[in-house]
Length: 127
Image (tube, rainbow, N blue to C red; front, side):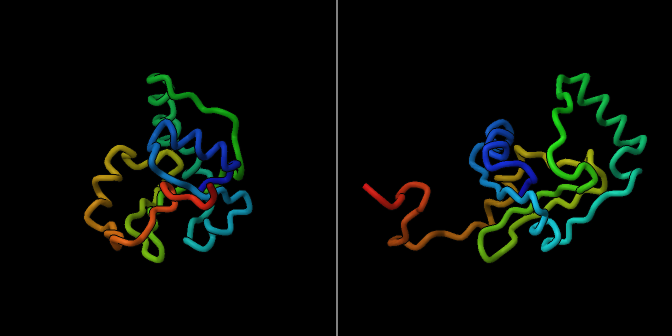
């Protein structure tokens, strides 16, 4: 979930995890439902966060335009309805998962589709 538009979420995940799908949640309803809290000043702009930000900037990862509530701590929750397969609950706004490792981490927990079940990504309705 993210607080941007669906297009902004797609653009982010295209860079980090192209197979992922995310829900746009500008009103932060899912954040609240999953217990995601707003960070304190130290969790959002503390010394550790600023140091991580400087390191990221040195590697070419600059901060873009702020979208949504800048104090909202993120988190990553991988859901295969109705189950939560994996989650990362950050301690600060600079605490991010290893995006490349997530598919490997969730693989053993994925449900195997029934042979007659269609994948909506591959078999959309219509002509």
